[in-house]
Image 1 (cartoon, one colour):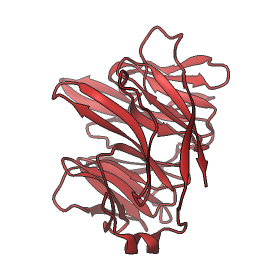
Image 2 (cartoon, rainbow, N blue to C red):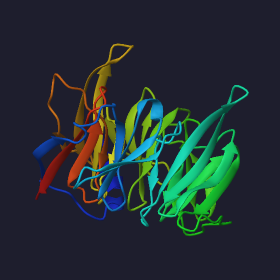
Image 3 (cartoon, rainbow, N blue to C red):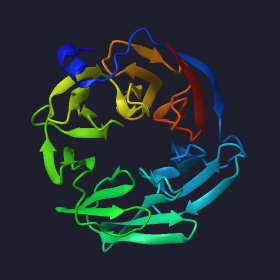
Image 4 (cartoon, rainbow, N blue to C red):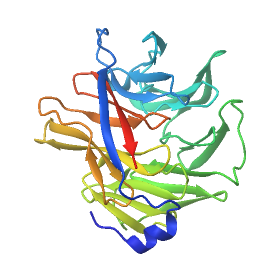
Length: 305
């Protein structure tokens, strides 16, 4: 892992040193379910877990204490990166094919029911958020919504958000949407803005995973680190290290790295099981992920100074 330490020290407000991450326990969460479950994520308060079925079809919620499960929707596409808002509602997509063409709508599910936010757009980008404000693109148009009120807003001058769409990175800052190309002419996936909104982690297809600042200046080279996700405090990243044979995954383990890349911890070590697509809990004390067979696991960790 290569690091520009000078730039990193200028940007980071906290210097991490001699920390240790310890795995305390791992539990399987969906042992009683008959259907496979995928892409688990946490609600904003951490009390529930959302998951989907095959090909992102449907969206369910599981209470972390009682394990009670409720279905939110059964529509196609709903499980693709749903967004949990701080008021307990969740925003999800619905994909439909009309005359052979794919159209995507955006919905919000709350205690008052399910409401349509954006209706059948030909191209709807991955949705970003900034303090419960929903930011997406429909074609070349930027659409911004207040999540809890579902009303459109014309401008978010104070918002900083990242949209990773069309294999590119677009940063919204000071009311301006600009393209970022930290690696120059490349394809960019898995882009995510840090909780402090001062750093971006992304993967360049065939190039590896990197961290850059909001000007696109490279800071850290994390190497093989797929689907990276920031910890809630912005001090660490969780990701999967996976291998495949060109047809299917042959192995994958979950890892955590410090932001500067100087420390890394193997969270899973299971040669007979593949773990994928990790997500942090809001408390930063748990990591959730799934297996290709549709098993959902949660690992509790502790960070020791």
